[in-house]
Image (cartoon, rainbow, N blue to C red; front, side, top):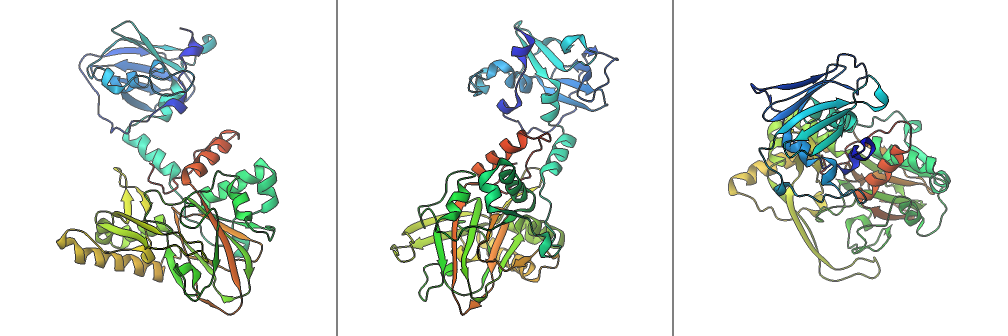
Length: 441
């Protein structure tokens, strides 16, 4: 086996989120090289009965369980597809290395490859960079979480709005990347100078991926006030901040709203960071936070007949889950907040009053906005607001008089994440996108 064929690619890795243990045993076998200087070089490695302990040249030390290493070795994955071809059930929980070694390319002092020789005389090789990227000790997990935790957008006047031009997005990879970076970093972005033509939002959406969630309102939909609306969006009423389609198992990711005509008085758009709100609630009222992360709410869409005028299809959908989803590390990873689509609560009897108390606390936090998280602006004709609706709640103020015609569509959050990760990988700074609110962690 050549060194090149042994290098393991991190894109194939299925990361195991295990907590770090001390991994210290009485019988220890070591390999050390004191000449190493690079922070991505391994200067020291040893193994005991449960794990291989690796120390990098900059002093960082971590441990990898034997089964974790064997489970992530190159021969577990198909060379062509990168897919797993060996199941975990085929591995022994008590497997032991025969010996370990450190290697470097071109006889340099940097030992950037760990070799583990198993007792069946097979060998596995691991790049130092891959091991460091996927270290699962608690400090590494906290650092990784902090690196992808969204930072809250703070308004600095209208000139501070994240924005790009339609032509730049449509005609260049740089413009597309700038747009997606704004969505990643700020949760939203304005797109200006859009042609006043039907389905322009679909063209924009296709720069990311296919349109999603089209079964209810079609590939794209019109937001025009109607005296008998089948959705509150088609009225002229104030709409409180909310998520669209929370009754789906996976609600839409990126939402597009293009102002074709905006002559009405009022109707300003409202955005607010749901994840920042959840953290604010945890700080101000930890009891309410705990309740909203535990007690399941009911989200529902019940429409017995279709409405051709508003292109609204018949639907019977329901999904129950807590409003706030947290990881095993206590991090907020998803928020589901949509008062217009909240159905009858079905929870344990002793949780009914606590649930409503917590909901009132969160609603008051949104309305009062003591942390100044709310973003309010008037969408101009020829512009579109695009936003990650898994992170940003959206709403609007009441309006009256004059025509107001918006066109909208959705893109799946997974297609967005794939697009920005690919674009990031082509730049000199291959950074990971921030957590996007889809429950992934």
